[in-house]
Image 1 (cartoon, one colour):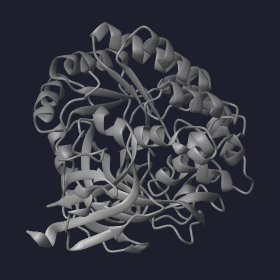
Image 2 (cartoon, one colour):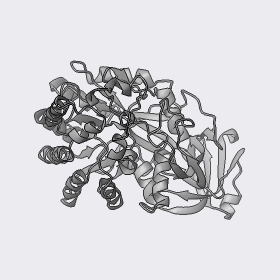
Image 3 (cartoon, rainbow, N blue to C red):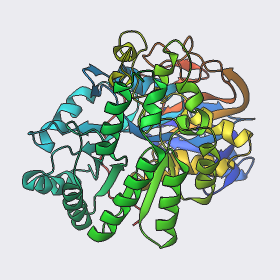
Image 4 (spheres, one colour):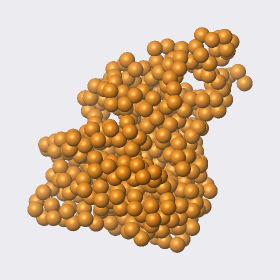
Length: 467
């Protein structure tokens, strides 16, 4: 068995709970033990592979609980496959993704889930799990929700946006929430008033307002806040927990904070694009703004302070990427002359850990909060903890050696996502992933990729651990 022992020596181990100068022993793909660096226990350990972590952080692999590999959208597909997307995730220190299987209108949930199993099986560089997008709530699909929970797919995404595609009305949402209340599932909500937004889109186009910046202007802050409020009230009626995805606006954070202040099981995520980008990017000239079209949309810069405050106060629990990349050439360009035809989504799975470390450097959050929002909280929220999201005996050996002093410049020329631009082009970052282990196997070794398609396996999840 000695061939599977790895010793990570001399680093600062940072988890959501504590920071300790400790050595980490990995055996058979799991964390076997931790001991204080220099202690007699640690000095007694032997291993066939010793990794020097001095001057580095030793952190849990990131858990990105919101990605869309190969998602069909607006007549095209997200440009990252499960193979390219999970490889890029690994480069960026993320060792587990939770992607979204999609139920097509008129088909079963199981058919949608099977289609996504097929896309991912044998392709992933790191471990993966699935949420289920429910786009057709009816008696049959409600029964299927129970079976999916038993199979480890324990969260269901509904949309108050995109009429005619993913949209569910309030009655359907209530029924799904009631079902989740019974079976332990967690409802994830895209909270925007899609019916009202469609009216505003139609009116803007009729006025000749076709540029990318109008995408943000029609998807009003108040329509995100209103939908967030409505989702919370429906969840209260159903007695169900609620997780609101990609929160972008101060007013929506305030709705979540008010609900949490009442002690309700209501949770929220935001994404790096809302923390670091703004409507200034959407307004970039010569159709460049199309690169930044996503929903919920980028907001005016003044919303960022409220999002950081929400993360510090735990009114927002998770930072995910909503990674859904479309190339500028040939995909984003589908919306030239009509912003409503620009595929919605940004690339980001590779840079979440780095951008959030930059937030530590900038004083927005603490080191332990970085690990909380990027690793531990998403793992707990979606039933993966303590297998994922921490460094503790028995946990999977998903471990990242992170150099907090290295500097890098984010660029499409050097990133590994299968997309022809970077949303953070030219941004200087302090901190860089050095080495990544996934279940004890080296995936990135001192800046060299050593992973392989098919190493990543499907991980069934238990129910939300915050309830």
